[in-house]
Amino acid sequence: MSPDHTDLWFLPLGGCGEIGMNLNLYGHDDQWLMVDCGVTFADPDQAHQPHVQMPDPAFIAERADHLAGIVITHAHEDHLGALPYLWRRFKGRVYTTAFTAEVLRRKLVEFNLAGQISIDVVKPGDRRQIGPFNVEWLNITHSIPEPQALMIRTPVGSVFHTADWKLDPAPVIGPPIAPKIFQALADESPSAMVCDSTNALVDGHSVSESELIPGLRKIIENSRGRVVVSCFASNVARLVTLMQAADQTGRRVALLGRSLKNMVSAAKATGYWDSKHRFIDPFDLGFFPREHFMAIATGSQGEPRAALSRLAKDTHPDLTLEAGDTVVFSARIIPGNELLVDALIRALKARDIFVITAEEAGLPIHASGHPAADELTQMYQWVKPELAIPVHGEPDHMAANAKLARGAGVTRQLTGQNGDLFYIKPVVGIRRKAVTTGRLGWDRDALIPVARS
Ligand SMILES: [Zn+2]
Ligand SMILES: [Zn+2]
Image (cartoon, rainbow, N blue to C red; front, side, top):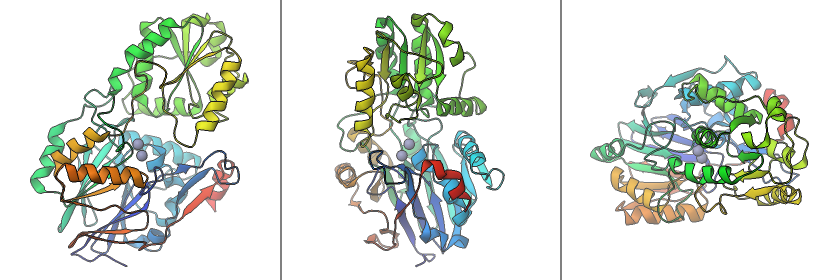
């Protein structure tokens, strides 16, 4: 199965029909372009399942000499987390922007792959010819530094690949959404738009990252004791917002958790961290009056070994919480993690620690990084693709996304799932289950030995 010079194909091996483990392939003229290579985290209740799961890359591994290159759109685990595990199976050159490259390099060190993978660092707005694919990187807004959409051009057709996005006029880090970038694409009538469906069932417009300060400040101001805020470590903009809220309320900030320290260090290395935002050492927290500091902790999803779970069990080496202290969830609960998060909240409340979740806060203290219905409609109206291909969602999300595309004037929509082959050129169509797909899994504790084999 090989695309010829008249074909433009899309083949998702992961992330289509599910949220997580994205692995997309584009095919043209006997070559394939990989876009993203991510993991998914299994339901923690399913103790028999491997914790880290990823798409089976057999299809592209079998034709690795036809892989033109690998583009990583942003540094979220569901877009780059599988690369260190799978790269040896297909060994392509990697193209990505500086922050994502920095996060990736840190992972490669852990897998003994540092120096083995060629990483081309590109800038937003750059274009690269990767085999027969001309790829342009386009700044978009999301919930991590340097999110990129892609315009992928071939002689027979083009694809606007949104990756993860929202329309944020004030994203705190990085440039605001620039409509003209996307409006300009309409001039060349993209053959297809492959689009994030995560929040297609949510009405309206996402909250801007910049709107969270009042809610967070109010909670911190009203707290008499220690304050611990948990959020996703990769949301560097949220960390900046938290630093500002702490500053405005006279509290110093400490980071608890390795992934937070890693992300801040990647942000520093790539110029996304203002040196005025300084942290106190967690070791010193014991010497600070309880109302004079705030800790930012990993573990908003109830992960048993993360800082927040240790605080709940009072086994954290640097910090002990007491009755009257406050724990804030500046994050949403990812479906599947409800039981773990519930148990964590119960453990905190049993010790008379106040718990404030994003749902209960009154004012917004969390902003989604994905487009709600109005944003999807807006983007379809800007880009005017000939065909909409919803991805990054469960079937309900993708169906809702397709409906919005239709409503926005996109005449054709195709929804499918992993392993379906989407024909974009010369004629639009879909071949169901064209490729066998599957999942590979590793237990977290077996990462390095298995990855070496
Ligand atoms: Zn994603
Ligand atoms: Zn993302």
